[in-house]
Image (cartoon, rainbow, N blue to C red; front, side, top):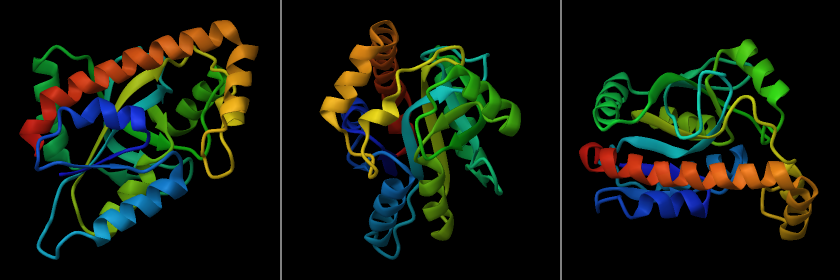
Length: 223
């Protein structure tokens, strides 16, 4: 398995559960970084190596039916416009069965990739109505496109870190144009919205813990 995550926090969450057959790649945040990292990793594979490509991480709920800590398995990943890219149905079904049996709340639906963090509840509701996607992230579609070009199967796993009713602090203000963290700006935006920031950080910790638990359940079987 070639497993992609966006951030060091997500990497730490899955790395301990990943057996030797799983290669974990941290792409960095955002579509461009994800596309470059995926292409490098896939180009470096030996010619006969045909791994499952998996994307694990956290994401924001677009559907009001989802709660923090829920698992969303991607039937497709999509952009706001354009054709969706499918995940592997057999792998999705097997993963859903294992996680459900282990007691996780599991949903199946589309993942939406956007170029910025979706911070406002009203925007989440609008995107859900427009696309029917359940969860939003910033990397899945770019990785899926690279997997499609290499004709490799795809698994998409996201843990909800903020629900559709929740406004986030303006996290985009804490990222530079290449999606690298700007510490002073991120600290300022969190301090300017202390209640929203405290809730966001609490839910982020919960989601990363659930990500580790999900990885513990399903990575050995999938590798």
